[in-house]
Structures are given as structure tokens and as C-alpha cells.
Length: 215
Image (cartoon, rainbow, N blue to C red; front, top):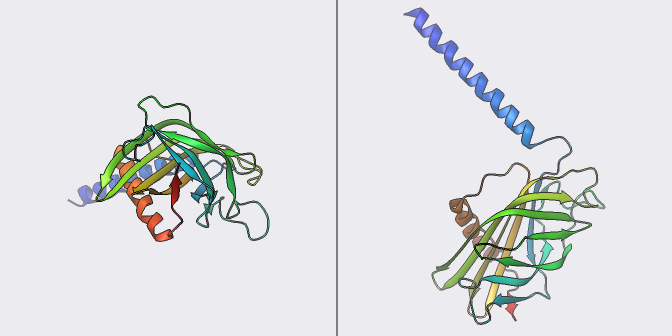
């Protein structure tokens, strides 16, 4: 009886040790020394005038939304934490140029955004959703790819990343919010996308940012 109990304890201990070892190996692979890590949140540039394509559509039916102009907010974490005085770090209010177009097509064109100072996110795949939430039209896309840091993040190297952007339309005004997450990222999942899209919508309402204007 005692030997069975001891054997059970040993087996459980070995199982736990293997699990810890595997977790460490996985984390070590996904968080290599020097690779950029953290998250950045974006709002709308004050001059942004979104264009829904085709004309006359709304965010729940548009095939694409162009003139998406991004500016960094105060929610950066990790390497993206706003610097107290100077880099490293991403300052609040950094305008990302040029503006971009997000596509809801089944075979979308290549997507990337960024500049030499902030860095560049380049997508390799995406998952999109469009739906009506109460009286609001909602659209969201999660892009999966990698982020190559710019001059504001010296000494950092490219890392896997996701970029999620959501749009919520009420009448003629459109609210927009987005988040870049850099580091170990999950595989594409429409369930995750839906949660992120709705979370972004609710977070945006709390921020009370100025709504964009439709061209």
C-alpha cells in the first residue's frame, strides 16, 4: 500500500517537472532575449476621414475601410511603455504614417502599417467579422504576422505579433480602436477575434474619443 502511494507521488512529481520544463522551453522559444515585447493601443488621428468601400455601405457591409490614420495612446506596455524623457519607448501621440486600408475580402491584399521610428507590422494572415450589435454596426479584424521595431526601440529584434482593429458605427459617426500585441501570440481563432472586437468596442466607449467622419 505504501509503495503504491509513494509511486503515485513520484509519478505526479515527474509529471509536474516535465510540464514545467516544457513550459520553460516554450516560453524561452517565444521570448528570446532582445526580441521586442509588449503592446500598444491606438486611437484616431484628429484629421481622419474614413472612406467605406463601396460608397453608401456601412462598417457591417463594407468590403474595405480606407484612410485609417493611427495615433498612439497612453496604454503602451512592455517595450512600448511611453518614455519619461526620451527613447526607448513609444511616446504618446505618435502619428503613424501613412494611413492604411483594412479589407474584409476573402482574399485580401497584403497588409502592413508603421514608420521608420515606430517600426512596421506585417501581416501574414487575418480573421475578420462583421455584424450588427443592437443599433450599432460593428466590424473587426485580427491580423497575424510580425513586428519589426524602429528607431524608437533600439536594440530590439523582430517578434511575432497580432494587430486587432475594430469599428463601431452609429448613424454617420464611426468609432475606431486598435491594439498591437507583440511577443508570443496564439493561432488564428474567430472566437478570439469576436471577443477582442467587442472588447475593443467597449474600451473605446470608455475612452470617449472623437468619432471619425465618413467621407
